[in-house]
Amino acid sequence: MEFTLSDLSPYNSTFSVSTHNGTSDPMFIASTGHGLTGKKHTMIHRVGHGIDSNVLSGEIHLNIIAGDRVSVRGREMKIIDHGLAWKSIEFIASNGQVYRWKAAGTRDFNLESQQGQVIAVFSGGSKHLFSPNKQATFSIYKPEELAVEDIITTIVYATRRRDVSKAAAAAS
Image 1: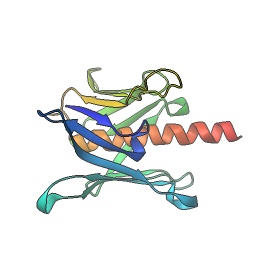
Image 2: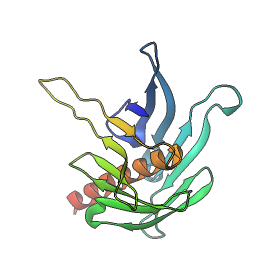
Image 3: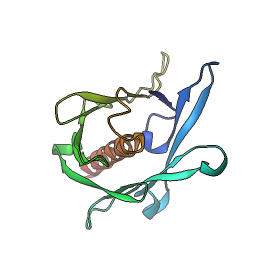
């Protein structure tokens, strides 16, 4: 399953899938609030048609004192561990298995199972002044392994938490 993102940051982006006729069909929309408190809250909606249109599938609340809260479809997701500077994040998914997002470059992440298999890859893209920009992409190689909502919510959390930590380190 291949997604293209409307922005380089997945926490303010539309995740779209290419259709057979060459157009892209939006599946998820992630948006982060603005202002002093809004910046710490991100919502992910699953885009659908009819009854299932615009269903909240994930929520992320960043909180330094009380700890971050990540929920998928109303169920709290347990973040087990994170590496130094948030370069890896380990979590328990809805299927009960442990997975880990690991940094694979300055803007890229790989999702690995406990057995070390790569399940998904996020390529952060890039912006250039004198050459074409590279669009951010997201590939899920084994969608049967884990719920798509779990994967998308956790990559949004991993990139958001890493970027917030980098900004805080640069400010101090």
